[in-house]
Amino acid sequence: MTVLVVEDVVEQCELIRSVVEHALSRSALTGRVFSALRLTEARVMIGRHRPHMVFLDITLGLESGLDLLPELLAAGIPVWILSAQKWPDERSLPPGVRGIWLKPEGGQLESSIESMIHALGLRGSR
Image (cartoon, rainbow, N blue to C red):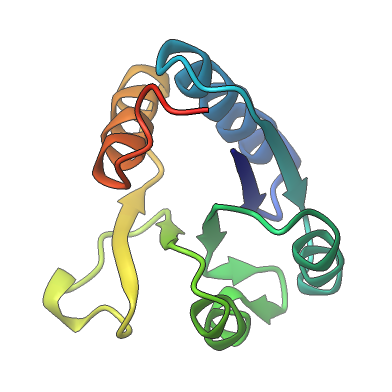
């Protein structure tokens, strides 16, 4: 399984990446987690690694993660939006987005990721 984390804050990106790696391990999955700090880097990673899921931050400095969303959805890649702020209403998420994920503290982050992996039906598969 391959996961891409698109997050422009280096410390948050590293934390999310670490938690995703741990969640994959706990779910008996082998895989790799890649990260990108900018949209151009994310596009390269998508082409190179063909991720099974993407965690996409909305605000990437002066860029918007939503600009990458149509490409991800067209490729059939499940997307979870990362946000530091509460989304007004999850029913108003862009079509095709699996969910929004508030950037929580470590423990919540891991259980959240494990739930997402389970929702994809990937638990225990390699």
